[in-house]
Length: 364
Ligand SMILES: CCCCC/C=C/CC(=O)SCCNC(=O)CCNC(=O)[C@H](O)C(C)(C)COP(=O)(O)OP(=O)(O)OC[C@H]1O[C@@H](n2cnc3c(N)ncnc32)[C@H](O)[C@@H]1OP(=O)(O)O
Image: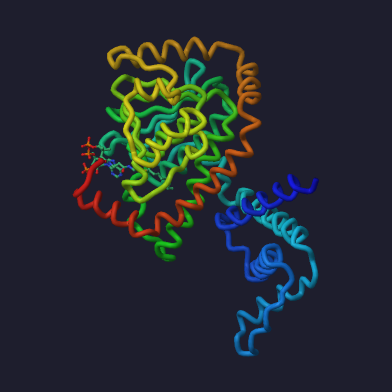
């Protein structure tokens, strides 16, 4: 009888453990000690290991905190742990008064161009000489653009690219300028940015359409599973070379891809990096419709203009009904994928792959 409830609680606990690693701010030693004690109590039960010696300061403090929980049950410790992490996450999510994210309405560089007209807000990746590879600034700008678009007048929002590529994925030079905290800090802050970026797609409240104007690589492919409609030119290809790069899936693709195309087709893409043509991606359900390149822009925009005249509230509400029951799951998947990638980015496999690309020894 208690089975399912206990299972849920264990799952919440596991999610909280993952979520904790992605906190934007250090919660401070006192809270960390509390979390440590609750974690030990939740996983091992009451403290019954010998007390560390007087001079072993750190371990003695940790032991004291754990021991202070006395005979608190594992379930109660798990619950307290989950509550504390969720409180910490909520306060670290709230925008800082100096720089509220929602106020960053205009992109800070020319690499992203946002326009509105004919009932459509278009977010255009605009770094064609680098195949629209996503810089750290572009992730921030896309987050801000999606937040602004979610509240603007346009019934439909589109993501597309300038030039011959849709997007070549994460700019691999993002990982080369190390912050003062070294590789660990770089991996931590990248995981937080990745999670925030993908969350914006999960939560986007209006019809979101990808106009895939050319080849797509990496994260620009995985997020397509979070779009409502994906139109592609027949020149487009879809490539997720995560294993080649020593990395692992993101953008919720570990969940959305098997759901969209079945687990073995998803595995071929996500584990082996099989590149799909536009027709293949359409046959597998990742792409809604493929258009000849010569008429792509004309046909797609004409169709979107017509759709944008439909009643906007009906479209929003229909999207809500279709998507809302999945949201919680998607957020949990996103947190887990970001966490796993944080570790991957510090691996030799990943560092070697990036070094190899940068020294131009490899190209996908
Ligand atoms: C907050 C962090 C979140 C991180 C989320 C993680 C995401 C994972 C991914 O997205 S994995 C995918 C990463 N992308 C790649 O590995 C692609 C690398 N690029 C290539 O293999 C090729 O450039 C190509 C196949 C996309 C295009 O080849 P082509 O021969 O047509 O063109 P060039 O190679 O000459 O490219 C033109 C210039 O653009 C630069 N460039 C292209 N893609 C990237 C990239 N992803 N990162 C950095 N730079 C890129 C390329 O170096 C050329 O620059 P140059 O003219 O100065 O030499």
